[in-house]
Image (tube, rainbow, N blue to C red; front, side, top):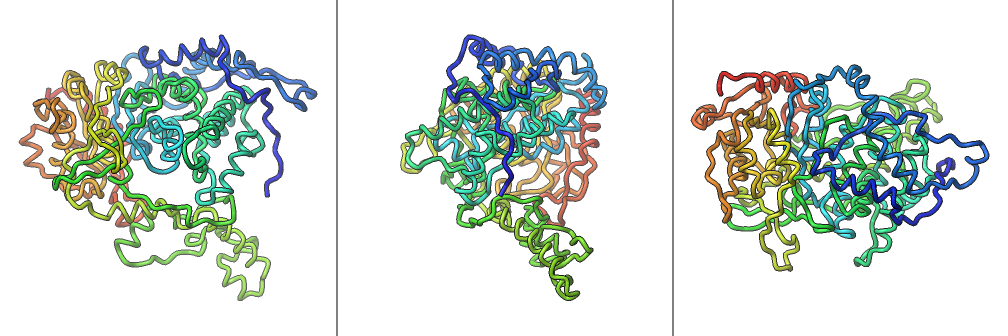
Length: 585
């Protein structure tokens, strides 16, 4: 059991907007039209943290909506003052010459590149889909409706500032997930967090803590008051997702939620994270795929990696100090492909301590020496890890189903009115987010990033007006190939993937179909050296697309889905050369 921690005082759980908070809400809702949805703050001067007397710390502190709004609204001034020092510390290219980049990607695959890209320029717009229906996001959507927030949260979290201990503490809180398999344990921990009694609050100043906690409490009120059948299940829940959803529900605006989240997690200046579409208040966003054989698969998760119920693997223990390497997706991919189980040290297989206090690396060795205390020390650490995340059931599941072939290749993906097979389903056409159009018009390069082709990249593109916006942009348009193929891409070659991007932007197989040529959408393809996708150079040359090889690093485990990964700094350098090269224009 955990020792009690200082409780975050909050005067009331009610969250009626005051005049000051309404002013902030209005400003936040207008963020997208002013292209400022992610103006971040790196630090709030300590003078902004209102000091308390020792007597005040011992009783409930009254924190009003006015005070909360004041802290957030004044944050840009603090950001402007602190930005030059942060830029020098990060080695960033500042000024008017910094390239403006638009990246289409999903929530996680591009995360390894974002830090190096931010070192080059902070003028990056990350366009993210909101159609995910897996993981804890699916439970939020089931109970509260609305677009999915998971991928947006993932990218915002990756971009979060880590320059101060408080910033790291905020990031740690928002990155935290509740117990992965046991609903009761997850719910108990959630109550500790939203009531302010959890160790995760340590290191976070009262101003930030009160802002974060108010939206967590608002989220809690919404899910507990929901009339949807079946109460909300907190298992594997992301605190960042809960905060994001609470802000979206309060402001009734996804852009406002991003605006707030970006300030709390201290996103770099000029960096913008935007959903690809405008969604109606609380409207669900559903993705479907039409296969070549005419069949329909409903739901992003079912297209990419159909899910199993991880809760059936429930355990009794609620936390862990560390996770063993054996739970990684790459490890189990290697085992499944090779049919061989590699030799591992005990801690690599079972988790826990590398060695005991007296240097024993395995329980067996400790027992052979007669040291029961060392054996017990190792066993306890192993049990905690195994109980916390038993073989990472969702990662293993993604590996298995990523290799479970589709019955037929994907013809196209589209937005649907519902993913329930019993409902009357029809195709819908959500509106492109106008912020995306603005950013595309003024950018220096468009990047189609790494990620699942049909569930991470194409949902950003298969939108009315997106094709014309990209075609009219007078810049390089760069496609990053993944390090390997997956369930969605099957046996596709490089030119097949280029054609899939073109077809999506041309809205092929719809009444809004365009006929723009390949070079209107893709001018360059970047290939990681040693990657697993076939590069059909003649077909790409016939399209007029230029091919660039990029340095890579081996995937963490041999025979993983991606055989290699991009070397981040090498990719950023290559992108800079592509942007500045005018020989092919």
